[in-house]
Amino acid sequence: MGNNDELHVVTGAFGYTGKYITQKLLSLGKKVRTITGHPNRPNPFGNKVAISPFNFDKPAELVKSLRGAVTLYNTYWVRFSYKQVTFDRAVENTKVLIRAAEEAGVQRMVHISITNASESSLFPYFRGKGILEKAICQSGMSYAIIRPTVLFGHEDILINNIAWLLRRFPFFAILGSGAYKLQPVFVEDVAELAVKAGQYGENVIMDAVGPEIYAFHEMVQLIAEKVHSKAKLIYLRPELTLFFSRLIGYVVNDVILTRDEVYGLMSNLLISGNPPTGRTRLSAWLADNGESIGVKYASELGRHYH
Ligand SMILES: NC(=O)c1ccc[n+]([C@@H]2O[C@H](COP(=O)([O-])OP(=O)(O)OC[C@H]3O[C@@H](n4cnc5c(N)ncnc54)[C@H](OP(=O)(O)O)[C@@H]3O)[C@@H](O)[C@H]2O)c1
Image 1: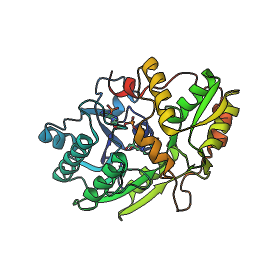
Image 2 (image 1 turned 45 degrees about the vertical axis):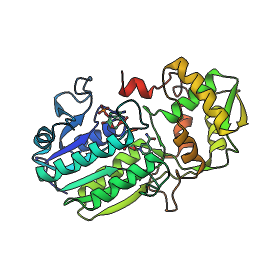
Image 3 (image 1 turned 90 degrees about the horizontal axis):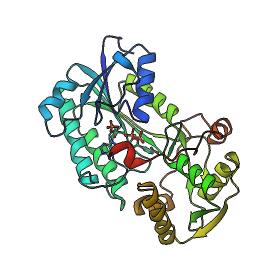
Image 4 (image 1 turned 45 degrees about the horizontal axis):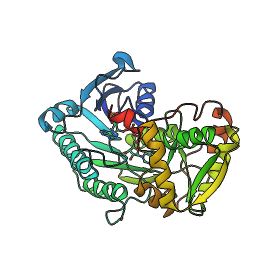
């Protein structure tokens, strides 16, 4: 299981998934360093977590930040291409990180990917993840690749913002039929899987999926019920839904939904053919958190670009 003097590096410990991975590692008494794009952000872990910037453009500095680590937990990725931070750039940055980890002598990489990642996907998000899975499998490190579907938890964006829209508007636009499926997974369950997988030696690729599968419109209905929304679900063509999401995005200064996300979701890429690996049910979590979810809008651009 490793000893507690060993260093573990987590990308994005002040973000969403990375924060829960860090919490779990610290609760096991492990030493943690984070590599982040926001080294000056308030550090909720105080002096328990050392901080280094990403330094993708200075690989030698990145190697220094990784030197002495046994395991790298990588959450780094972008939700959509925006300005200079494109999917291609995120793939290249992650390759720099993988090479730096190898050079620093990191033994194991736990990488957060996505269900149905594939090099041949039509969707750049899934394709980039597929390319990186291959690069990790070909690296000199042992690996655990964790493939979550859509996450839920306190700092979540997607499910939070569905709740936000349901609380504020008399209508909620469902993309197409709404019958396509998704299998949400609790962020803390993903962190637990990641940290467990970090402690094994063998190479694994596993889906991180919750115990419940929903048709998209059923999930929206469930969220509506839990936040006491009376919004009527209307079924619209995807392009029209995208148009409305852009209008609202203009008001909240964010990208609410991308074309890739729309068609990725409608292609049933957010479910797994394997048994669930997460325990927490979205329905139970919503029952406990219905009062707080969606009270505030969660901004992707606010989190990463402002
Ligand atoms: N959220 C979901 O529903 C979901 C579903 C399936 C898979 N995943 C995967 O899970 C992993 C973690 O996702 P998360 O939602 O927990 O992400 P997150 O904490 O918001 O971000 C993870 C890391 O990526 C960096 N990052 C994110 N967007 C960036 C941008 N536009 N420019 C530069 N750096 C950026 C963050 O930088 P900072 O350190 O500066 O914050 C952080 O280090 C990702 O690999 C994602 O693909 C997420």
